[in-house]
Length: 107
Length: 458
Image (cartoon, rainbow over all chains, first blue to last red; front, side):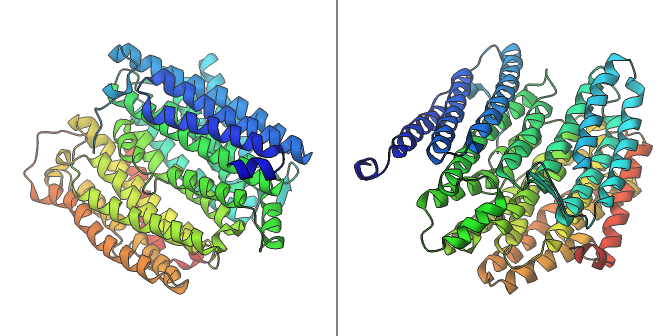
């Protein structure tokens, strides 16, 4: 990690930061059991990708990456809308957002 | 390109039809419209156009797979009139969302830019999350929808991170330019590119439900409404494999031996897991889910030999698989409805009550198992020869053993129909189900006997 940062260009700092953010998101999805927090962690992963794309785009002077970020934002909004709707219907049926109760379907 | 636009227009029509109280018109207009779009799509054959600064490219691959996707959707829509007969209030929502799934699939066949790949996958997936959870008061459907949503968006994040890394190393999202980059810099490809490619491949393996990323498939298939399961196991699988094949045949990644190891391991694992787990299933939808996973394993053989084989075998196999699966669902859906259960035991003694339906179900199962003269047999045969020609001996051997195991669990359904005493279930006769059923079986037989026109399509 040190070598990457010392010898490289400032771009690597962004790479490291967004990788850390992405990993936090992955850990959150894997280990938290509350549906809402998992949704937040998915958002964190998406935003770390946004950060990475913008930094790559600024570094290489190519705007394609920044346009892609808009697409990701739109899709993330749609995804959260659907996710929250599903979570609400689960909450109405089971009165909980803990995903451990989702165990009707097994093997 | 026109295909995508017209299909989106059809989707919007469904939403607006609700406002103007044209509910009765929705399905007929959709079926007619899709038939017209099918013809327009064939019109683009050999045209090879690019749109929107090379974002979308219409070539023979996208026309052929798009045609297949439209055809499958058409058959599912014909089934939907009876399936949603009691749920007319939400008909326009369901139909428009199902149409947007098709739009996503068409985008996945014709992308020439990673942006379009991402948008296609998301259009398809987000619509499907909704449909998987569309039985709002059924906890199982809720669970299926939310599980699919969580795992699907998790995989999409990996896809995006991979795309971002590829962009960082190559400076472009354009598939053709990425290929150029990899050919020019063969000796010093940045490790970022490889990391990105691995993440994209993992995300695609998730979308095609290949092991070790298959866990969502059985749960989602079982919990979703049966019609959505039929749609998922045919159209979505074809779309994911079309996009995967296009990615693997266009990028440099597959020529590296490390990629071959990943894909081979995934193929072998998928074949083993899919077939072995299917042996233990008692639920019909879950059985078809594991059967879908094992078919994903066979299709993985085409992906690993994508560099030197044309897509003909992939197209033929997708066609054979979706025809047999749709035929199976066309019989199973009315039986599920009549029996109120989705277990294999719902088929007990079907042969005595409905000999014709039982015979058709047996033919669908034999087609899935790959017994001649159905198209499934030749599909497997061509896949195995292609994989052997590309030198993947052990993977092909596994696939052959896997298909022998496969025969056993497909025969479980046939045995239930012919060997077990009949239950008290009374099922009606529906023209739409029978139409789809016999069309699928007839086409499966036809293409099994005359494979040449489909196989040499490219």
